[in-house]
Amino acid sequence: MPSSPHFPPPRPWSPLSDLEWHALYPYLRHRSPAGRQVGDLRRRMDAIFHLAATAAPWREVPARYGKPDTIARYFRRLTRSGLWQKLLGDLTTLAPTHPLRQIELSICRACRRAYRIVGFRLVLFVRRLGLHSALNGPPWMLPDPDLSETLFRMALPAIAARDIPRIGLIRRILRTTGGRRHIPRWLRLTWS
Image (cartoon, rainbow, N blue to C red; front, side):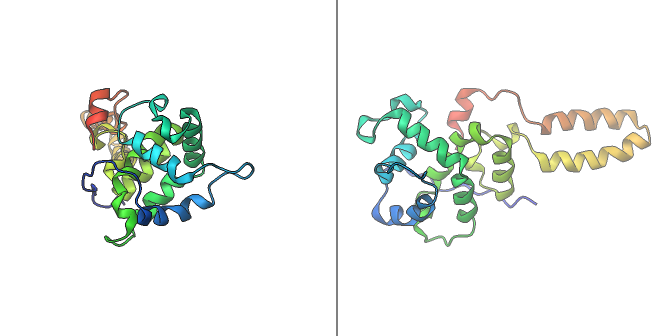
């Protein structure tokens, strides 16, 4: 059952403070790939959060953070290892004064970029947590699997009774719960 929607307070991007970094580091320590030593993790996370706060592509990462393809590759590795799901799941249980709460919006914005890699599972996970600011667009334009399951259960008796008008209505509603095929870029970028 989805929890009530939660939106973190808006906050302009700023580099991670020492307290925020020390709260985030335990999540990164085990997700860094084995092998060659990873560069400055803090600087990489600053780059990811900086880019997540803008609509800029990866190639526009400021030079002080390193090579753009290195930052993008590291983001993909973190995404595939489940970092964003772990952080979002823990954010729902942390105390309001926890240091990760200060970067909650940055984590949600980074999660929006992870949507293309993880796919529908991330939408489902975020909806069930109620962190709508981590969605890649307005919730009413994205798929809603819980609502579609409920409607499908309602449709079965209507189909059995051959209630044609009700079947048509349920079909249209189910199509709506599947989300829009295309959300305009301007709308995705303004969604927070």
